[in-house]
Length: 351
Image (tube, rainbow, N blue to C red; front, side, top):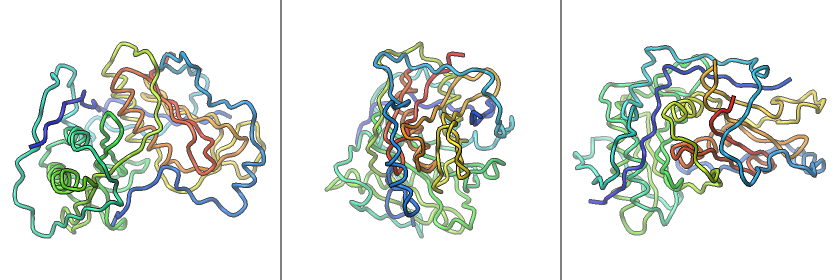
């Protein structure tokens, strides 16, 4: 069996958190973070108006906190209810600060359920670390209650809003449940998703050559897949950690789980640009909870106009949470989107 060092497990008790978006006046292959198709002519228009002074440049001695004026809180997203069933998907994360690090073997697996199919492919990544993937696997819950998986929305229609990703602390391996047919709801026990991921880690990542893979046809209707894939992060964490607090990890986890993650291309522009096509004013922020924010996600840009989707930003936020927030640090990622001009910064609120 392959050993894995237990990292600090992610604490997500999002049922107690509110969330705001603040805008000042088969799944065969993993998605690339820079894979955004631009409408004809938009890339050239964006590149022709480059700003010489980038607002997304991080100070070298950034302490990992983000200041945000209270007057900017003007757009609120719906908050999870106190009995939010999605907490069951995250019930292994609660209060894990006293868990000692140590080796944890891969599980003894039951026979592969009938109908499940495992595919190993270099398209999911090569040269992957089994220990990193096993660390990501330790984040998966073992709940045996059947939950509904579907696309995330503001109404929190499903128990588990997708996309949902579990990423190792080195940012190189992730596990992700995915719908095979978007028009159908997937009904799956989270424990089964963990078994599916373990099979891929054993057969694909732990095999030769080490590569990613996917288990298909989980749940009623065979509508869920679980993939294990390689990730190449562009995250830089702040140099000095602040006192590690569960509430910060909780709040940042709530942002990652509730923020918009659409793959539709949007126009992100500086708020002083008078553009009738403007869809997102920059800088833009997500905060949690709604009152007295604890975690802040900030999106800035180095061009007057840039083109990206929220999925790219969600991927960056997920990586920052896994690699930095868990360690009591802030983090940032520059060069996001089709124009490679957005920056995402995430950290503890200093308000």
